[in-house]
Image (cartoon, rainbow, N blue to C red):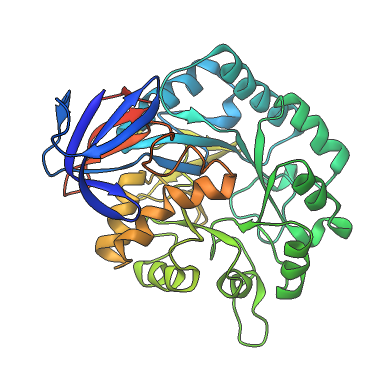
Length: 379
């Protein structure tokens, strides 16, 4: 495959170039016009494919549903919004539900699927704080346990790559250390942790924070909490939901000013209702949800935000056009930064020879023209 454009995102800037791909890998990045092309995209922007490291579902499927056909359809269709790699994300539930969900992901990965690559599982909960549980079901919240987590990881066949937990409930930070030692990224969230507890969690191996500003101890000039730690710690990644509702554009701008171009990670935190027609009944963790006119999903009959219906290409548009985040920082947040966060930046998140041919071709209005998953055109 040979494609070209006058605007290909290479090393943090646009360049007129050709991309050559074989067997799912980028094998060459050449000057425009070097070879005959299979497709010339003119002046459309070609970016690395988007990585969504915190997403519960879409198209009527939730990771906790544990349906192989639902997971396969999700992976096949999610490139519609430019996503080429993903962490299906669980929500707090009872052990039998979580175990079935993890086994389902492991089975689909083992047996095969098409579309966006499943890089692993984001295990959100059940080790959360009751006060800051948000929409997570309280009846299933549990104390952190290395022994129990090992069982979950066994069910996942080693695919749990990231875990969200409340560090203040992790006695002597034992689970955080275990995860760090075994290649699982620890993200602090759904937590009332103090600033000092957050620093201790970082010292024991925590590497990020889950949907900063949402479901965490707030900022006060004499009690900075988790939000204060997220803004102050310059070597800790921070997820941010970029729908303009979970955090309004001015807050998104402030967050990116604090984290810079290398540590912000855009996530959708999308639910099963994303990309579904109006109407229908949907659930998160066994609790009914409903979607408002603003696109956010809430627990039915309440003002508690449960997640989003955000698409990654729209999140990029909101960052650049509404929050006025510099383009390079906005692009990094959905490509290179999540790849580095997960330790897969040797093949994901950038356009370079030797990397996977994961690409998204964008119109100027941020609509997706084409997505390539390991060199295969998906639209």
